[in-house]
Length: 346
Image (tube, rainbow, N blue to C red; front, side, top):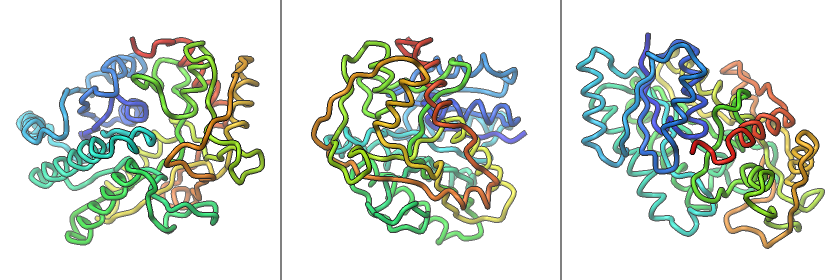
């Protein structure tokens, strides 16, 4: 049984991926600083699987290289060396990154550099990286392919881009050693259908879907929509929303692909290839939950773009992956999580 290190495994996508990997018979070791997550996420994961003995957790920050070295050393000493890494850990709010760029560069980039350094020291050279569609240059050439021009428009995206550049440099420098895959998410939403794990932003969320749910439970009175003058059919921004469980499955398939093939670097878009406007998302949520979401239009938000839709054909061809869950399922599952856990994991 292979042991996989999952950084940021207590987070939204990380916790769902931990469950997926456990169900696929991997032994996983989770590292999380808990700055933006809760250890209760892993306790909920344990309730959803009978493979609890294959999960261990270490609280710590990737910027602390001595902590990382200690974890790798302890696992090696227990004859449980890490075979690969799924790397989620990092700050992820686009809007916040525009006002705190130094914090984002410090956490996301310095933490990753330490991780890569310790991986090299331990001859662990397989990594699936949690990247983002925010690295793509704003374009009208849709859907967006992996070969599209890269140019981030916000600091969060810039940190993802520079990490991808680092990984590319590693692959070029050691072409027969590193197995690397960057998964470029478009807009993950929803939750596990059990309602036990889901998105749990600490403080006021910044992404549209958790904001909709906060309005739904009455914590926020009215949703703010950033702009109704975008060049779209209804004036609101269009995004490619994808169920978090589909994202989690893609991580398993990407990891499996790397472990079974020769060293290489390969990037994949993770999206549905379908665009949904903000108003369409609100209407779908209202339709499936029967809950009214009041909203108002405000100015465009710094760092946003008009329309972002994935070309996901490469993941389908190489990983035999395709999203299975509909927008209505995303809304139903997300609301089940939120309504069952109005205060998140508290």
